[in-house]
Image (cartoon, helix red, strand yellow):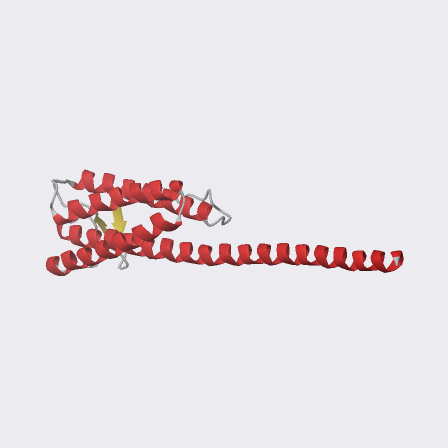
Length: 190
């Protein structure tokens, strides 16, 4: 009888240990899968937000081309450019809220700085604030630095390698177009 009891106890203990380890493995697998799903959602939120922000900056550059401040930008009709800015601002707003929902405080702080920088470009392009060529260039430099900071924070949030990579952009005061003729990025007198 004692041997039967010991055998039964061994089976119960073995089953319990097997169940505990299987449950822990399932929990760990589910947590890994959940992390992957949230990382995908974060990545999508970050890329959609960056897409809207960079499109706003690009259209702002197209609008200031008429002032001679971004001669490499494509020509754009002012009304069409303003409508495009409105659309990209709406997209930026909704994607920013996803960034806030899914990311870290460092990412949110970086996104706040990027928002302020792209708004400054937009306001200058719209003529909502006074601005000269040097104001545009300062706003563009601030935008680039804020963009880099957000990208660093997003890479860190996604735990990607190269989280400390920073792009170094030096904008020349004279640009050469495809036909190799140099022209200034400013209008005479600016």
